[in-house]
Length: 115
Image (cartoon, rainbow, N blue to C red; front, side, top):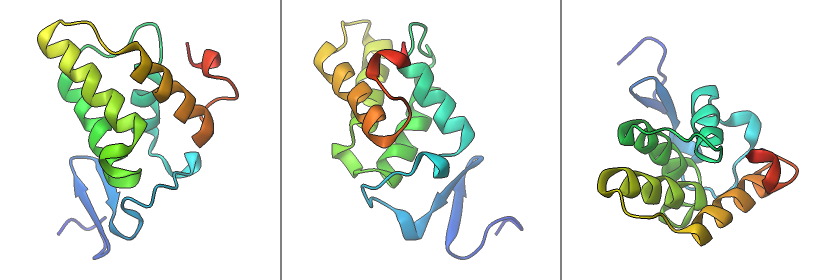
């Protein structure tokens, strides 16, 4: 076990996973690791990440700490990774739900602030 890890926290790469706070559905923006926040905001921007592995890294965090497979940030990450892998159009409605969720979580005051 890494010296920085406790028995209640594990790490997959450099992103910590808080076991006690998994799939709570309650995400506090102050508790989102800086790298995940940055990746999440970039996915809502006009120039989202183009590396599916980077997108899936953020997806994993949202799956674990958000609402599981129903978490809009997780769902949009999977949709965007699918788009990157297949070059098929992405789901605009799912993108809007993702941006609305980020407003609900507290990443922005309005979904249009994220672009």
